[in-house]
Length: 487
Image (cartoon, rainbow, N blue to C red):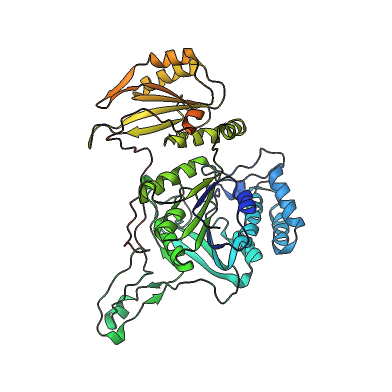
């Protein structure tokens, strides 16, 4: 597989259908997990007929249901060590959310082990709530002899909770695929202790130092040293909440360290839970090929914007698979999953979905911000309403009311259906937003068919700065793999 592909869909299905045996050099995965739930909730008995398990960027939880039970039976019937491990977990826990999480992870670990090259590595990112159970699963999948490190990612955050020490770390389980002598591993180094530096000195740049490499003076050439081998406690700061594209976004330096140590240029990197795309962006900057998989269109949209903002429009050559590319595909998505249809449709125009509880969106499905007054000018906004089903003049009228209430400049209705004459008349009655580039209809109606054909929103273009998505820092060819986060 050539790489540089974003897949939309369930990673289990995509792994089985699209990724061949022994084709991937390095896997990093950070699966969603409900770490905020109490142990009493995680281990409570569940009824197998509950609603189908869902597995989305903002719903990081698992539920025991009929799908989970079916997957459990498939793995157990397949035999091998991982089957015996799940049977033991079932006897220990009973059927609950924790068992569901482990069952779903087991099915994916089987596929990840299959696609990884004999020379490759896998890093499983988890928090201490389930890391001990996941290590047993990893031992069953990859073999205890291929376990290399339990890496502690240490960070600082505001104190939370009582009657316990502050929880300030995650765990990364690092395994090789096999015991091949050609396994890929590039040794990283940390600075020596201050007392050692004072005594011996060094002139090397230490590539594995926490957060940043540093050059220190040398006394003589004979005293040069690369430093101390990188240890398994990594003090790397978290991405500040104000800069996060996704709630659980991981910092660039964390992925830089993993990718630098366990792959080489042009290797293929896989992230099956790619979220906002930190793995993708770092792999691209370090000249690796990549595959990202996510089950939400929001994630795919965020990654598209991130690649454009960080590397430039059209600079990164990649494909997106699983998105509707024709009207019949869009109709199927609208019928099967209106919510995902909404995210996808907003992604076509670069708008950001509004995350709110069902029934509380107040007529707003998405927003897009722009500036048309130059630097320091007022931020303007476009309000979006997306309709997967029947659309009437009442929806246009409602949108007019929303943009007046929100004091927005423009409102856009995206619909599967073609406009009726009453809808056109209602939209025309809203008048125009005027800028130095001319008049722009305050209410615009765009069909999915028109958007797929390339039609876009009519709004000021020349000084237009779309600030809808937080932007990643521009890639710098000269920066090292231990710099501050990309965002």
